[in-house]
Image 1: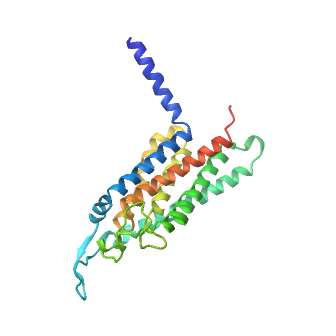
Image 2: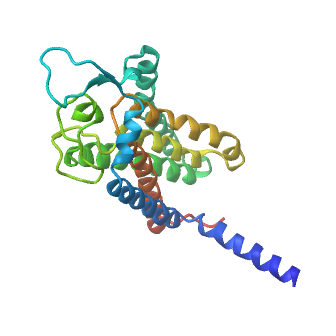
Length: 258
């Protein structure tokens, strides 16, 4: 009986591992997680306010006193070392995408036995997901239509606009809005590049790379540029898009069996 139980458990475990090797499984899982998080932040908007408030320092208002007016700043946004660090991470996804494009072009110049079809596939998925995710979906679409003011723009943190919850489309912002974070989306895309590593190196280099990719979202929150929901959903959005592009490639261009 013990042997049967262990065999069934091992068989089920292998089935789960095989299932999660499929991009479609990751797509469904990540998309469900994205909508679940959005529902949580929409239902409990004070989560965003409480987290932003931990990085906000209230100060005395100068000039004419207005009842209920809040004045202050996000002090981390004025530290030069963090500003430089943010600039580095801001340009890092574009730089990495450029390097991947060079690798793709070089690979396409090979023919016959020296041509690596698998590399073409992997680089193409990475580059298409970068364009479709952080650039099109986030910066061209969501940040344009969401209408959500950034924390420092709201009257809760020294601004003039009214706070709006994640997922609402009726805020005062008209362009380059807070929902969702483009820099967090870029960091999420970088984290997805773990799949480009050789399998033996993923357990070694994957966790540190993922931890580094969490720095840009943290900086955006501490600077008052985004809420927690903006960065979490921005980061996860790139993972969803990456899985979607990989699923498309698997459905339309299945890998040849060796």
